[in-house]
Length: 636
Image (cartoon, rainbow, N blue to C red; front, side):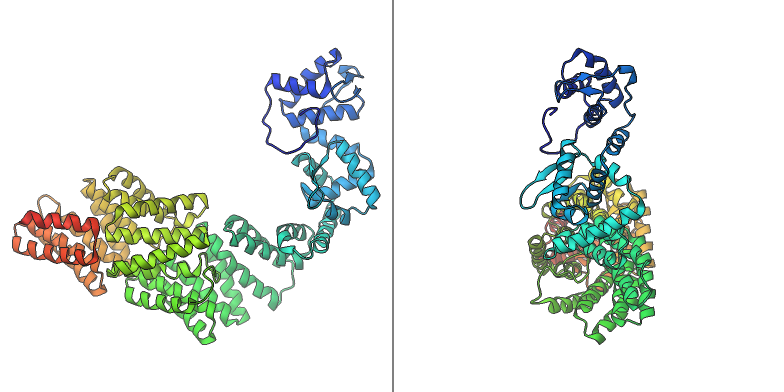
C-alpha cells in the first residue's frame, strides 16, 4: 500500500506496532536516520494508517525528508521536527501549503462532495480547462484526490472524507453559499435530461446555497423518492427539511398549500417508523392551514389521516367523525384517490368497533374502485392500496367465520404484496394471513408468516408493526405448546406497544397465556383490564373476547363459582351472536360445554359441545376443532 496510490477505499482500523512499522518502512525506507522518527510517528498517530501517511506526506512537503518514496532520509534534526497532534491538523497544515489556485480548486471540489464529477467541477471551478487539469494533476500528486472512474464520466474522489471536511471547513460562509448555488446550476445544466437521478444532490446544494424556491422543490422530490423505496428515515429528513425551507419563502397560497401537502406526504414514513406523536402534531398544523386555505379536498385528506391516527391509537370511537366527514367530502368532490383513502380509514374504524358487516361493505366499495388500476398505486398511504384496503375485509370475514373466503382473499393480498415487494405491504399481508390461520386453528401455517413479518419489521425499520407481529407470533407459540416463549413475546407486546389498534386483543391473548401457564390470578387481572379497555373504547368484538376469557378463567377456579363463570360465557355469547362472530360463538359453546361438564350437567354439556363442534366443523377450524371433539368424545 505504501508505494501505490489508492484503487479503492476500505475502512482501516489502527495498526499494531509491527504493522505500523511495516507501513512506515514501505513509505519512508530503511535509512538508519529514520528510526527515531518512525517511533515518534507511530506513537503520535496511535497506528492510524491514514494519519501515518498524511504525516509522512507533510514531512516530505516541509523538507524534513529528502529523497523519494521508499528511500527517504532525514534532512533535519529530530528535535526540530513538529508533528501536529491530530490528523485534521496535519491536513490543515498541508492544505495551507497549497498555492492559492489549488486551494480554491480543492475547496470547490469539497463543496461538491467526496465524489467529484469532472464535468460538474469544471462548471464551478472558475478555471480554464488547462488550468483545471493542471491543478487536478498537482492535487493527485499530493494525494489529496485520486481518479475514481473514467467511464461513463471522469470522476475524482477525495483520498479520505477528512480531507474533504478540512477543505470545506476552510471556506467562509458567503463563499460556501455561492459555491453550493453554483453546484445547483451546474447539475441542472450538466444533467438536464436526468435530474431525477441527481435530486438528492440538488436538494442538498439548494438548501446549503439558500436557493429556497429550488430547495423546497428538490427536498420534496427527494423525500418522495426516498419514501417510494421505503427509506423512511431519509424521507422524513427531506420532508422536514422542505418544511423548514418554507419559513424562508413568502407566505402566500402556494406556500400554505405546500405546507399542507408536505405534512400529508410526511405521514406514511412517520407511521412506518412508529412516530405517532409527530404525526398528530403535523396533522394538526395541516388542518389549520387547510382550513385557512378553504381547500375542501385537502381538508378531506387531513380528516382521513386524523381518522387513521385515532384508529391506530385504538380510539376508533373518535375516528368515526373525521372518517365520515372525509368520505362525504370525497363523494361530493368525486375525488377518486380521496374516496379510496377515506373508505379504507372507515372500514378499519368500523372493524375495530365490531361492526364487521359495515366494514366489509366499505371494503367492497374501495375494492370496486380499484379494479383495473395499477396494483402498485399507494394514493399517499404507507402501503399499496390494493393490499391495505383488503386487510379490514379479510379480518372482518375471519371474525364472521367466512374463513375460506378470508383465506382466499388473504392469499391474493400476499400475491400482490410479493409482486410489488414493498416492505410495509409485505408485513401487512403476512400478518393478515397469519391472523386468519390463527382463527382457523392452523398454527403451523400461522407461525412462519408471523416470524417472516417480524423479520421484515426489524430489517426494514417498520417499527409501527412490531408489537402486532410479536403478539401474533406469541399467540401462535402459545397454542403450539411453547408457553414460556409465548409469555415473553406477549408480555413484550403489551408492555411496549408500537401501535394500539389491536392492543385490547393482545391484552386478552396475554391473559390466555397466563391461564395456560397456571397463573390464574394474573390471568384474571389482565382479562379484567382487557374488558375495561374494550368497553371504554367501544370495541364490541374485543369486549366479547374478553368476556369469554373471563368465563374460561372462572371455569377453572377452585371452588367453582358456576354462576359467575356461566354469566361471563353467556355475556360473551350474546355479544358474539349480536355481531355475528361465528368462531367466537363456537368457542363460547365449547366453553359452556366444558363448564357444564365440570359441574355435572351432562345434558347442557353435550348440547353446547355439539353446537360448538358443528360450527367449528363448518368452518374447518383445525386445532380448535380437534380439542373440541376431544371434549365431546369424553362425554361418550
